[in-house]
Length: 335
Image (cartoon, rainbow, N blue to C red):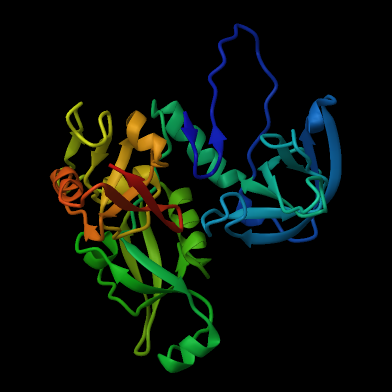
């Protein structure tokens, strides 16, 4: 099983012999300043062990560069080839999996990141249950980190947390009583200061569990219980494959619902068509799997049938606006 968002994969080994193993340590007990060892195979020279300390916790957005993710920071040298290696404490317990570095030279500058063991344990549990990809609980909301200025303007008695800026009608948080403008400050008693940290805490709890979420607003501070669910496949997704008569033969697109957003790591509430397969013609102009088709010839795309109709009326030139990650890209081509 694999999880592209955390850059983790789990392999199943068949052996009649007992194999060595590591015990997992609760990531919440890790403290800044602890001595750690990073194990890996840097540059393919062979297995090595490097030492350092935990230099930071709750780091976000380092592996993907898009603000997603939640990591332990260490100054133990991590170089190419160390990714996937163990980060262990001095008692030999696993506290994380090495995943990335922050560097300008390509080598270690003492700023490395590891996926917390508590999240790794959830990924392993889903693999053992037979899943092929890791599924996170669906919050059905978007938000931003709270700061002092925003807290003062909203008269909120805290400067740390995640303020809810939008909410899906089917969000389990809405069902629990949350509204836009509420601030989430903790999940099961553990602090939350950003959307990435909240998603991490929900992921560690797991689908099917119930989480106690601390809510703060201008009127009160209380705890509400939220059922952690999978993203709903509602309304039913519509998948369209374009035939040889189309402008983009072989292109396969899907309408977008919460389940599609979760599967493709899309921002919540995005409008358009998700590209499942590009086909040769669409690929030749730069369309890739995972892109979102937003518009064609400056007309919003609401369903797959619109694409050929819009391009047919546009003369000999066409333009498609796509979203790829956080970027919006305009692709121009001759018809």
